[in-house]
Image 1 (cartoon, rainbow, N blue to C red):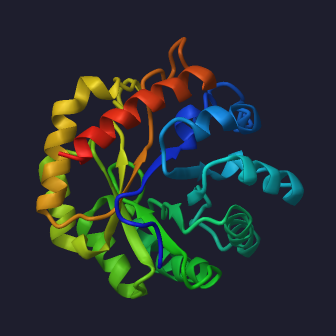
Image 2: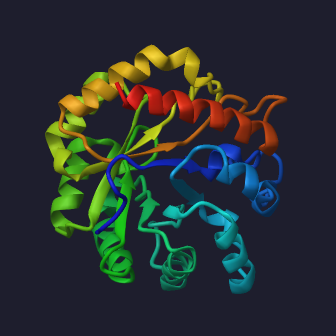
Length: 265
């Protein structure tokens, strides 16, 4: 099988990381200790993880110990830059994929429209470094990259032309935006980030406060032909006094039960 199995529900470890946006430590280093939280994460009710690349130790032996203690890593969440040729950075992503055993890599192309040909070339180069059963998943939503435009994203996918290139959409997007994405490249959309982050305040409601919208979005996605996998990307507590790994894992456990109930409808 290529990529992540349909119906799989993952925890994005960025959800339980207080330093996800370098607000705790400007170096960007993670403060959540996944070794310490491994048992709680394993019992939280997820099928696996979308692992933030910074949560994987650079040391191969420590990485192996951590991966052995956690649920299976299905997606590596990478923020490698596509704005310059950097073979060493791409090699590092490939090494992390091998070490964590991920089936897919989440990535973002850059935001410069003039660099579209370079983004195509670099995406193809990264794909070439992956095993034949590993997919690249382009995160497509507003304010991130040129792929926020469905027509541009579709063109990128077509120019690369690989069946191992997929796309991620998000529950916080308006229904009309999702329809445009499916119209442009619906056959590529294989993963959803369950995410109700308010970009203006960087706050996240509990999933119970958005359950009606979540149910509507799930119904819409299925009506558009979606039959893929899911990641709980953020949980309530972001940038509040509850932005602590132990409390964020607890919230994630509550939210995934609700998500599964909605998916079973």
